[in-house]
Length: 360
Image 1: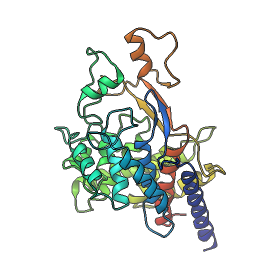
Image 2 (image 1 turned 135 degrees about the horizontal axis):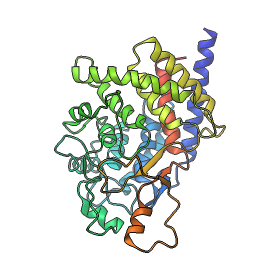
Image 3 (image 1 turned 180 degrees about the vertical axis):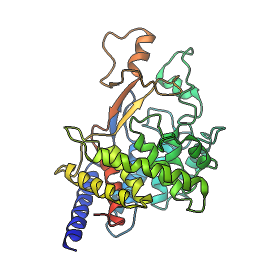
Image 4 (image 1 turned 120 degrees about the horizontal axis):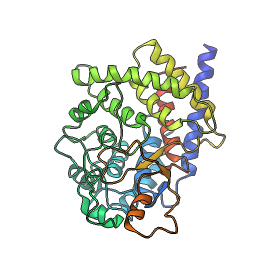
């Protein structure tokens, strides 16, 4: 009993530190900003993601004043066509919009006019296969990037598993997303995202969406059983990681989902290892450091080129002149969450999920 109480206290303390870190990082305007790509820092997308992580769950410790400030920011950041975007300079996209809506649902603002317009905007991104694309059409994002007409944007206007999985966790999710996710599951039980190196993000969101359907649905039951085995292996592997950069984001994505579907001793033991590692890796500031790596495939890539040399975005080289050089420098790059906000928000979700299951 003493060991259980001690483990629970460690989790509670880590959760409190993570929450304090995220609250301290909120901008004066109510938003959160992170990542650094050719478009600059993201605020709309990051605010929805961090805001939902802070406010989800139950209990008196939820930071409502910060959530209200964040919602006011998102209301002011709405795009002219409805929904939200990476930041004010970039056309609206489905991923930013669905995270804004998930935050709206968490704070009971989903019936507000700004949210209704966002749902309508999101519906325009539903593809024929039932999935969600990041962009509904190529024109606006092509104009923003300045890419010439001969560069196809087929990769950015098709269904994306990572976007669809996150969208499937909306209470008012678009019809067809569940069937799409089941059809996209990899043979090993995981799911592969488009904009993330770590498969744990898409897999975690997909499993959480499927687990909300209920055990009587054979589609979700079979997919979850296969995914739970994959998640258990991944959690054990990631929790044992050593070195300077720890895989906090990937581990937290996997552990949070596994906490929802853990049905055997192996899964519960994996979650205990995840809890230990996440608590151990947390810094005194309450953060974990950057570990969420957002990648930007070329817009013509239907599948992110695994053979490509992915480079961390540091700006265009000074000698870049031709369109081909600009294309090569602008895409096939990545950015970690250099402020650590995505990693901390994801770890906070995972620790809360593990604590709810009383895993020690």
